[in-house]
Image 1 (cartoon, helix red, strand yellow):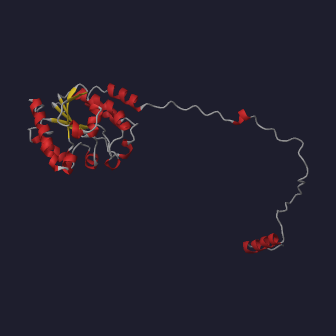
Image 2 (image 1 turned 45 degrees about the vertical axis):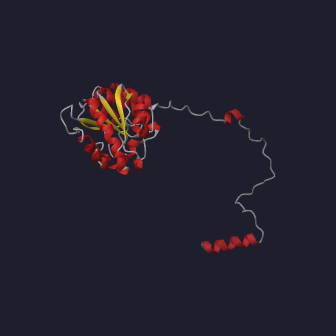
Image 3 (image 1 turned 30 degrees about the vertical axis):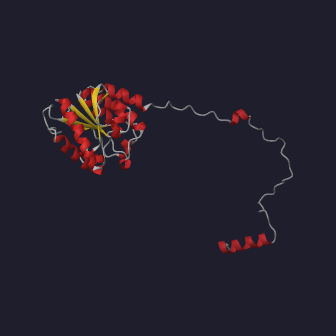
Length: 258
Protein backbone atom coordinates (compact mmCIF):
# COMPACT_ATOMS: atom_id res chain seq x y z
CA UNK A 1 0.00 0.00 0.00
CA UNK A 2 1.33 3.43 -0.93
CA UNK A 3 1.79 5.85 1.91
CA UNK A 4 -0.38 8.97 1.90
CA UNK A 5 1.47 12.23 1.31
CA UNK A 6 0.76 15.11 3.57
CA UNK A 7 0.46 18.58 2.08
CA UNK A 8 4.01 19.55 3.03
CA UNK A 9 5.46 16.63 1.07
CA UNK A 10 3.11 17.22 -1.86
CA UNK A 11 4.09 20.88 -1.97
CA UNK A 12 7.80 20.00 -1.90
CA UNK A 13 7.37 17.53 -4.77
CA UNK A 14 5.45 20.05 -6.82
CA UNK A 15 8.10 22.72 -6.32
CA UNK A 16 10.78 20.19 -7.34
CA UNK A 17 8.87 19.41 -10.58
CA UNK A 18 8.63 23.12 -11.35
CA UNK A 19 12.37 23.55 -10.86
CA UNK A 20 12.94 20.72 -13.35
CA UNK A 21 10.93 22.69 -15.92
CA UNK A 22 7.56 21.02 -15.77
CA UNK A 23 4.89 23.38 -17.07
CA UNK A 24 1.86 21.11 -17.48
CA UNK A 25 0.15 18.48 -15.42
CA UNK A 26 -0.12 14.99 -16.95
CA UNK A 27 -3.64 13.61 -17.08
CA UNK A 28 -4.65 10.02 -16.55
CA UNK A 29 -5.72 9.73 -20.21
CA UNK A 30 -3.59 10.97 -23.15
CA UNK A 31 -4.75 14.03 -25.06
CA UNK A 32 -3.78 14.61 -28.71
CA UNK A 33 -3.66 18.38 -28.90
CA UNK A 34 -2.75 18.25 -32.62
CA UNK A 35 -6.01 16.61 -33.57
CA UNK A 36 -8.35 19.16 -35.11
CA UNK A 37 -12.03 19.07 -34.61
CA UNK A 38 -14.10 18.34 -37.69
CA UNK A 39 -16.19 21.39 -37.32
CA UNK A 40 -15.58 24.58 -35.53
CA UNK A 41 -18.28 25.50 -33.08
CA UNK A 42 -20.95 27.53 -34.79
CA UNK A 43 -21.12 31.14 -33.79
CA UNK A 44 -24.32 32.53 -32.50
CA UNK A 45 -25.70 35.31 -34.62
CA UNK A 46 -24.95 38.72 -33.16
CA UNK A 47 -28.63 39.48 -32.89
CA UNK A 48 -29.22 36.26 -30.99
CA UNK A 49 -26.52 37.17 -28.46
CA UNK A 50 -28.18 40.42 -27.59
CA UNK A 51 -30.77 39.70 -25.00
CA UNK A 52 -33.93 41.65 -25.25
CA UNK A 53 -34.33 43.61 -22.00
CA UNK A 54 -37.22 42.49 -19.90
CA UNK A 55 -40.13 44.90 -19.98
CA UNK A 56 -40.00 47.28 -17.02
CA UNK A 57 -42.95 47.93 -14.84
CA UNK A 58 -44.43 51.33 -15.36
CA UNK A 59 -42.94 53.81 -12.92
CA UNK A 60 -45.35 55.01 -10.29
CA UNK A 61 -45.93 58.76 -9.99
CA UNK A 62 -46.06 59.35 -6.21
CA UNK A 63 -47.67 62.76 -6.64
CA UNK A 64 -50.52 61.25 -8.68
CA UNK A 65 -50.97 58.51 -6.08
CA UNK A 66 -51.05 61.13 -3.31
CA UNK A 67 -53.62 63.21 -5.19
CA UNK A 68 -55.96 60.24 -5.55
CA UNK A 69 -55.55 59.17 -1.92
CA UNK A 70 -56.04 62.70 -0.62
CA UNK A 71 -59.14 63.32 -2.75
CA UNK A 72 -60.77 60.15 -1.41
CA UNK A 73 -60.45 61.30 2.21
CA UNK A 74 -63.83 62.61 3.37
CA UNK A 75 -62.74 63.81 6.81
CA UNK A 76 -59.63 64.35 8.91
CA UNK A 77 -59.72 60.81 10.25
CA UNK A 78 -59.77 59.44 6.72
CA UNK A 79 -57.00 61.80 5.67
CA UNK A 80 -54.76 60.67 8.52
CA UNK A 81 -55.37 57.06 7.56
CA UNK A 82 -54.60 57.79 3.90
CA UNK A 83 -51.33 59.45 4.86
CA UNK A 84 -50.39 56.55 7.11
CA UNK A 85 -50.93 54.13 4.21
CA UNK A 86 -48.91 56.20 1.72
CA UNK A 87 -45.76 54.19 1.00
CA UNK A 88 -43.95 56.35 -1.57
CA UNK A 89 -42.24 58.84 0.75
CA UNK A 90 -38.83 57.63 1.94
CA UNK A 91 -39.13 59.71 5.12
CA UNK A 92 -41.62 57.20 6.44
CA UNK A 93 -38.99 54.46 6.58
CA UNK A 94 -36.75 56.38 8.96
CA UNK A 95 -39.38 57.91 11.24
CA UNK A 96 -40.91 56.45 14.36
CA UNK A 97 -44.46 57.48 13.55
CA UNK A 98 -46.74 59.76 11.59
CA UNK A 99 -47.13 63.27 13.03
CA UNK A 100 -50.51 64.41 11.77
CA UNK A 101 -51.84 67.45 13.68
CA UNK A 102 -52.63 68.95 17.06
CA UNK A 103 -55.00 71.51 18.48
CA UNK A 104 -58.57 72.41 17.61
CA UNK A 105 -59.47 71.39 14.02
CA UNK A 106 -62.35 73.89 14.09
CA UNK A 107 -60.04 76.81 14.88
CA UNK A 108 -59.97 79.79 12.57
CA UNK A 109 -56.17 79.79 12.50
CA UNK A 110 -54.13 76.94 11.07
CA UNK A 111 -50.39 76.87 11.63
CA UNK A 112 -48.31 74.99 9.06
CA UNK A 113 -44.79 74.08 10.10
CA UNK A 114 -42.07 72.37 8.13
CA UNK A 115 -41.66 68.86 9.52
CA UNK A 116 -41.37 66.97 12.80
CA UNK A 117 -38.20 67.03 14.86
CA UNK A 118 -36.93 64.46 17.34
CA UNK A 119 -39.40 65.37 20.10
CA UNK A 120 -42.33 65.46 17.70
CA UNK A 121 -41.33 62.12 16.20
CA UNK A 122 -41.27 60.53 19.64
CA UNK A 123 -44.55 62.05 20.85
CA UNK A 124 -46.53 62.02 17.62
CA UNK A 125 -47.61 65.68 17.82
CA UNK A 126 -46.26 68.74 15.98
CA UNK A 127 -44.39 71.52 17.79
CA UNK A 128 -43.78 69.92 21.19
CA UNK A 129 -40.04 70.60 21.59
CA UNK A 130 -38.39 73.90 22.53
CA UNK A 131 -39.63 75.53 19.33
CA UNK A 132 -43.14 74.29 20.09
CA UNK A 133 -43.04 75.68 23.59
CA UNK A 134 -42.04 79.06 22.20
CA UNK A 135 -44.85 78.84 19.64
CA UNK A 136 -47.37 78.23 22.44
CA UNK A 137 -46.10 81.30 24.32
CA UNK A 138 -46.23 83.42 21.17
CA UNK A 139 -49.87 82.66 20.46
CA UNK A 140 -50.82 82.80 24.11
CA UNK A 141 -49.68 86.43 23.97
CA UNK A 142 -52.58 87.17 21.59
CA UNK A 143 -55.06 85.00 23.47
CA UNK A 144 -54.84 81.82 21.38
CA UNK A 145 -54.08 78.25 22.44
CA UNK A 146 -53.98 74.77 20.95
CA UNK A 147 -55.88 73.47 23.96
CA UNK A 148 -58.81 75.88 23.59
CA UNK A 149 -62.16 74.29 22.76
CA UNK A 150 -63.52 77.53 21.32
CA UNK A 151 -62.86 77.98 17.61
CA UNK A 152 -62.28 81.71 18.13
CA UNK A 153 -59.44 81.20 20.61
CA UNK A 154 -58.03 77.91 19.37
CA UNK A 155 -55.28 77.10 16.90
CA UNK A 156 -54.78 74.04 14.73
CA UNK A 157 -51.24 72.87 13.94
CA UNK A 158 -49.80 70.63 11.24
CA UNK A 159 -46.68 70.30 9.05
CA UNK A 160 -45.83 70.13 5.37
CA UNK A 161 -44.38 66.63 5.81
CA UNK A 162 -45.69 64.30 8.54
CA UNK A 163 -42.50 62.26 9.03
CA UNK A 164 -39.24 63.40 10.54
CA UNK A 165 -36.45 63.97 7.98
CA UNK A 166 -33.16 62.29 8.91
CA UNK A 167 -31.00 64.47 11.17
CA UNK A 168 -33.69 67.16 10.99
CA UNK A 169 -32.66 68.14 7.45
CA UNK A 170 -35.02 70.13 5.26
CA UNK A 171 -37.51 68.07 3.26
CA UNK A 172 -36.43 67.74 -0.37
CA UNK A 173 -38.50 69.31 -3.18
CA UNK A 174 -39.61 65.80 -4.22
CA UNK A 175 -40.78 65.01 -0.69
CA UNK A 176 -42.64 68.32 -0.49
CA UNK A 177 -44.33 67.77 -3.85
CA UNK A 178 -45.60 64.29 -3.01
CA UNK A 179 -47.01 65.40 0.36
CA UNK A 180 -48.52 68.63 -0.94
CA UNK A 181 -51.82 67.01 -2.08
CA UNK A 182 -52.37 65.82 1.50
CA UNK A 183 -51.65 69.30 2.88
CA UNK A 184 -54.07 70.92 0.46
CA UNK A 185 -56.75 68.39 1.35
CA UNK A 186 -56.00 69.00 5.02
CA UNK A 187 -56.65 72.71 4.52
CA UNK A 188 -59.84 72.01 2.57
CA UNK A 189 -61.21 69.77 5.32
CA UNK A 190 -60.19 72.00 8.26
CA UNK A 191 -61.43 75.18 6.51
CA UNK A 192 -59.31 77.74 8.38
CA UNK A 193 -59.78 81.46 7.83
CA UNK A 194 -56.07 82.20 8.23
CA UNK A 195 -52.94 80.11 7.72
CA UNK A 196 -49.67 80.99 9.42
CA UNK A 197 -46.78 79.61 7.35
CA UNK A 198 -43.89 78.97 9.72
CA UNK A 199 -40.55 79.01 7.92
CA UNK A 200 -39.19 78.59 4.41
CA UNK A 201 -40.52 75.10 3.70
CA UNK A 202 -44.07 76.14 4.55
CA UNK A 203 -43.80 79.22 2.34
CA UNK A 204 -42.49 77.09 -0.50
CA UNK A 205 -45.33 74.59 -0.15
CA UNK A 206 -48.13 77.13 0.25
CA UNK A 207 -46.90 80.09 -1.78
CA UNK A 208 -44.29 78.59 -4.10
CA UNK A 209 -41.70 81.01 -2.68
CA UNK A 210 -38.76 80.90 -0.31
CA UNK A 211 -37.05 83.66 1.66
CA UNK A 212 -39.25 83.97 4.73
CA UNK A 213 -37.21 86.88 6.08
CA UNK A 214 -38.47 88.93 3.12
CA UNK A 215 -41.93 87.37 2.90
CA UNK A 216 -42.81 87.70 6.59
CA UNK A 217 -45.31 90.31 7.64
CA UNK A 218 -46.98 90.45 4.21
CA UNK A 219 -50.34 88.83 3.60
CA UNK A 220 -50.50 86.41 0.71
CA UNK A 221 -52.92 83.80 -0.60
CA UNK A 222 -52.40 80.05 -0.71
CA UNK A 223 -54.93 77.22 -1.25
CA UNK A 224 -57.65 79.88 -1.29
CA UNK A 225 -56.83 81.10 2.23
CA UNK A 226 -55.10 84.22 3.58
CA UNK A 227 -51.53 83.29 4.52
CA UNK A 228 -49.19 85.12 6.89
CA UNK A 229 -45.54 84.02 6.52
CA UNK A 230 -43.71 84.08 9.83
CA UNK A 231 -40.26 83.27 11.13
CA UNK A 232 -40.04 79.75 12.49
CA UNK A 233 -39.79 79.51 16.30
CA UNK A 234 -36.57 77.52 15.90
CA UNK A 235 -35.10 80.53 14.07
CA UNK A 236 -36.24 82.83 16.86
CA UNK A 237 -34.46 80.65 19.42
CA UNK A 238 -31.24 81.14 17.48
CA UNK A 239 -31.90 84.83 16.77
CA UNK A 240 -33.72 86.35 19.77
CA UNK A 241 -33.60 89.86 18.27
CA UNK A 242 -35.99 88.69 15.55
CA UNK A 243 -38.75 88.20 18.14
CA UNK A 244 -39.73 91.83 17.65
CA UNK A 245 -40.62 91.11 14.03
CA UNK A 246 -42.50 87.97 15.06
CA UNK A 247 -44.52 90.03 17.53
CA UNK A 248 -45.50 92.45 14.77
CA UNK A 249 -46.67 89.54 12.62
CA UNK A 250 -48.70 88.09 15.52
CA UNK A 251 -50.41 91.43 16.00
CA UNK A 252 -51.28 91.48 12.29
CA UNK A 253 -52.84 88.01 12.65
CA UNK A 254 -54.77 89.11 15.73
CA UNK A 255 -56.07 92.17 13.93
CA UNK A 256 -57.13 90.18 10.86
CA UNK A 257 -58.96 87.50 12.85
CA UNK A 258 -60.91 90.10 14.81
